[in-house]
Length: 294
Image (cartoon, rainbow, N blue to C red; front, top):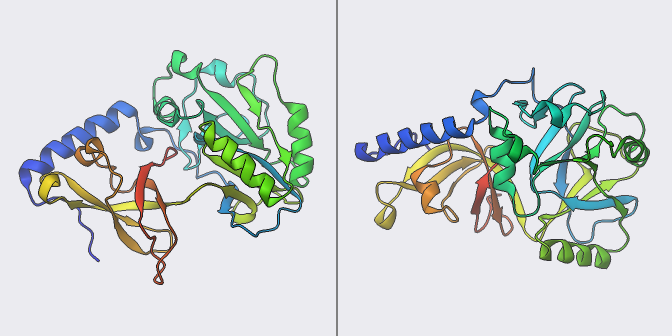
């Protein structure tokens, strides 16, 4: 399948590209942010499936914000872009690395993204943010031991916005489902499971699992497919590429504003789906949002 890099209607191309340029400039997207020497080596989650053993797992809420890595001096996104937080926000942070989520509260993902992306820190916006810390990447020992160190490290009296993520022991599948239902009902995104005996491994593995009410995944935008009918002269679908190289069109779930100002080629988007086809492509894929961390 070829990459659709532009729309055939010239009267559509120019306005869309112009509006997109203005939008990216306004939000201060990753391309304009100072970069880390490389993306931080972070532990990434697999997906929990019913029937998987819960033995030795801790469970916590999955916070819907922007993944953030504190290297002891500065904050960075998962993609390695520097986060320009106000000096007061990070002044009291310890010198050891922290792995967590910059979070503005349930249902406030857009606020978290716009705050983190701004090249000029907005004090008012940052006062609504919390740094939810869930691990210590450079700390020796397994997760249970690291959690003990984290609980002694936080909270910090002078920085109450830096919070150790509450963790409790997972028990049964029924209890996990009840906690998931309760969390989602309160506006949460889902849950995370972290194996107590796990070392901090900078890779995607079953030591860290996400528990959600639906399947979701990420794909990179590689093209824009022009619309037809009611979507003529604007975006019809995104052509996206999965990490394994498979490509598919993602059109369902896009708002009118997103069709007028499509996610930039090269950006990563999150979509939800219901299982996979025999060929490994997502069934009934639906666009959710542009990934918040570059």
